[in-house]
Each structure stands twice: as structure tokens, then as C-alpha cells.
Amino acid sequence: METKKVTSNDVRLPRPSRGVATHVTRYREDYSVILHPDDFRQFEALEELVSEASRLDRLLPSDIGIRVHLEDRPSKPIEDAATLKRLFG
Image 1 (cartoon, rainbow, N blue to C red):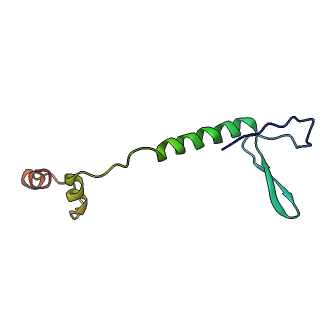
Image 2 (cartoon, rainbow, N blue to C red):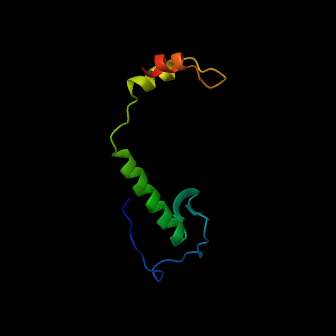
Image 3 (cartoon, one colour):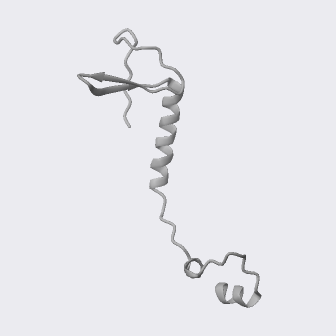
């Protein structure tokens, strides 16, 4: 997201509070949002994290993972050696 700085002399804004987003409306429509600088920095960091995560290579399940996922899930852990060998090869 692009950011733009405006000096406080150019606008009249209420003092922002941490953890509170103030919606500014104009003609009953959302016009802008006022955030505390700490909240804005957190928003920017989260936006960067999501952007980086979207560029990661997709993870695909392994053949064994697919087989295990498709097996019926018993209510108790599988402890039988033969069953485990059959599932995991």
C-alpha cells in the first residue's frame, strides 16, 4: 500500500487512540480512517507478512500424507505395527 504524509497543520483530526480506528464519514459514506501510529505500523507489518506469504511456493502433501489423510480416523491412536507399516510403507 502506498502511504502519503500530510502535516497536522494542513488538516484537523481528533487525537488517535491506540487500538481504536476512527472512521471519518462524509455525506454518510466512509471517507477515511484515523489510526494511532503504532497501530498503523502493525498494519503495515501484517500487510508485508501476507504479501511475502502469498509469494511462497505452494506446499503439496506427500503421497504418504495423502494416504494417511484418506484413511478412516480411529478414535484411538494407531499403535499396531502392521497397520503403521501398511500406512507408512
